[in-house]
Image (cartoon, rainbow, N blue to C red; front, side):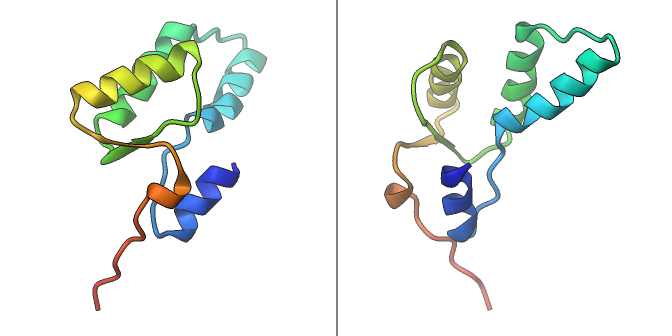
Length: 90
């Protein structure tokens, strides 16, 4: 969450896939099983709406998202310092 806050402080509105944990937990409480493949499709829908990807580190899903972001021609960031601040239009 520290990275997300850093991006927000720079004026961005990050989509944070890990927050879907709360939706998944609620679904499980209701007896609804959402498989890993669903979550990858869910993330891909959001990724197609993004301008860039912030790659935090390797995992099965994160590496798939990284390759998809490259296919989409998105900018890839690995450090909050690399991410530009949003210029506010007056």
